Image (cartoon, rainbow, N blue to C red; front, side):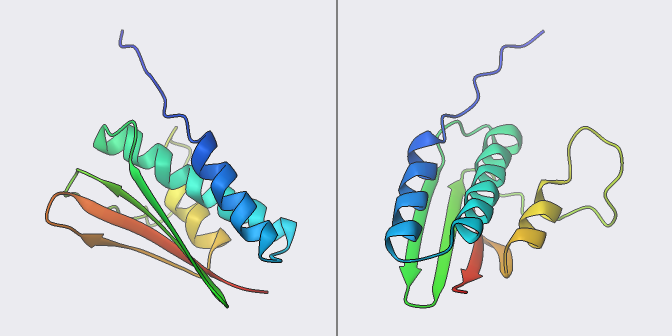
Length: 119
């Protein structure tokens, strides 16, 4: 048995929501961005062992970019076809909720990101 201490992503989610809503983004798009952010934070926790990953929010006039950095060098790949496994569908969800996503190696670890275009 092992104890799991999931990350508290409330602050990052709140910051993202306030940023988008104050900039006039629709609530439905904001909710999609929050869910995609949640998936990236959970992945950093579960697969990289990072309970407090660095989250960077960048909002330009017509584009949002969210980046979650962790210390694992392993670049994630979505499964070819989602199955009935307990995990492994998060990146499919991120892909379906956002316009673009990817991962870039860093000096220590990686940065996983997604982008959404303004409606």
